[in-house]
Length: 382
Image 1 (spheres, helix red, strand yellow):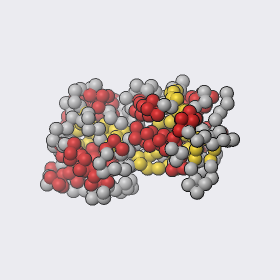
Image 2: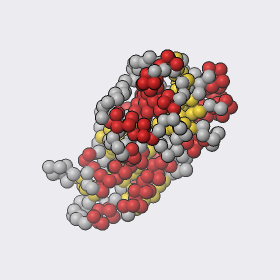
Image 3: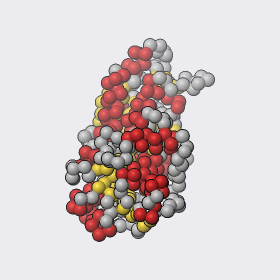
Image 4: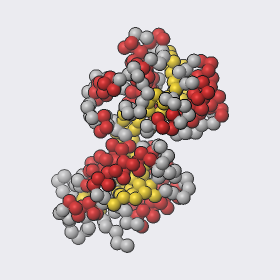
């Protein structure tokens, strides 16, 4: 099967176009015919109500609208070898733009990107640390991200802040943060959450009445030991809502909340359906990463021959608009939250204030945020 090749046309704008090496296409329809998009799941299904489903839905919707060929691939198992096999299968089937959601793809990108320079790799929530660590493990200490790769990470401190601010404005005064492991992304979520809680409490004049309990589970999945810790928070300490952040660790918070009538804040994607399956209206809101917005922006740039904006980069994405909530790469889901006191208009005002610099949020991960609320930090559960 003949592959169509991405050729870099060196010009003043350094624009990249999807062309055959011998002839540049001139019509929009021809360019569209040359872009064929495949999404590979990290190992799960496209109905996981998380990264895979969100990425699949956004990729398919964009391709349907633009008239692009699209398909998805599910690895046979949860390993780098399985992910590489699915990537190679997509390439063999003549797809030339691959959308890969989640940090688990770091090793697969290192292994396959250089060998397939005519294929465009779009990695979601894959940090430079993830990529470079994977390269070092393969003996590539001086490895550089190839020009056919773009990886997006997100300014987690912003949606963390939004969630904390909204929760206190909603009326919660005893909150908890349950992180998976103390890696930078999780810390940014947690410290952003503390900053948001603190700001709302100060604005309301109740800083002396607001408490945040803070702990890392030490793993990215829930179990009985972590649930027991959350039981203690909800039942014994009087915690009303827990922001559970880090893979599947949220299940322990939801299990405990179900037993005590507590609430949970979701993370990364709109987790309302998953969390509310434990009890109606358990999910207060979710601190989201705009995977759909990322997919739309990058695929649009590819169609417009503006891949140079992303080529060989890892970028931290945050707010890009003070007024268009859907365009932002970090956000809260206004359609599904269960808050009654914190309004959509207040959320829009908060977003505009952050975007315009009126509200400053630190992304520092080494130092606990300055605060006037009570913040209780505990040793890792495991």
